Image (cartoon, rainbow, N blue to C red; front, side):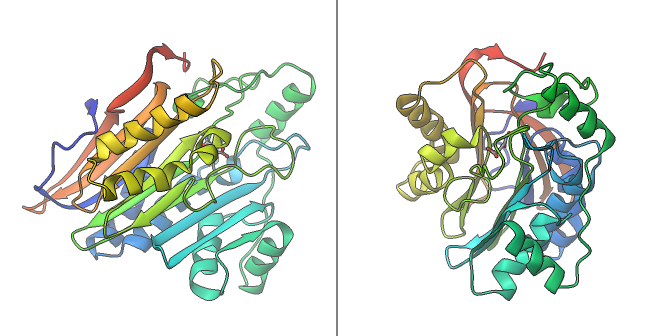
Length: 324
Ligand code: SD4
């Protein structure tokens, strides 16, 4: 599959689109495709995130995720259809599919965000099996971390699971997915957060306006990277509001990264990235450093499906690539 900028090349020619963060978002997109074909954007987002959550080789999302500094995994997820319809969970430790739980928060509760044990209890109330154990690789990575053999943060490690040795833990995470059809869209995120984070630490991913935002009148944005940076600029909301003021997705994505750079002292391993889809279906993405890719799956107006892996349209530090 070719890799090119995610820009607006298919604007006006598409009927449906799944766009996800990182190259492995391609598999997630495929998991959501049938639902999207039926016009069900929320289902498509949920299924795409569930695919990543179920992948034991994915050390940044779901059950295969690396643990926090106490050796326990904690997961965050969110889903959003529109400003008055969204749900999220943070710091769940027993629920295997946090995105499903985030959807239940949206659809079956009068809350928007549930956290910790009480969120896990909600999953149990719903009758969902909850059994989240550390994978063998995660256990070994944790031992390395405890022994001082692991250094972090390391940017773009999402892209090199196969190459990951136990002493090179992946420290960045998050699948972010946007499903779009003519007339509707939804966005979602799911992550195990930063590896070896302080227990209880929650990043941008389950925080509305920071890690995700969706207003189908305007567009949607999902984020990945160091949550502390994205939280500081309300990244996803900033992108959508920039589009509301007339910016194109590529410019709104760049705008977020520039704001981030203007307001934070960026460290050498600080990666943050956004993926934006406008209500027209036009896409854009931007990142602090090189190595961030997005995955696109779309149906054209003849009914044919296409896939593409795309580099960010804008990279703040094009000379820096930390994934090797
Ligand atoms: C967090 N944004 O918990 C997530 C981590 C991430 O690529 O996406 N890293 O801060």
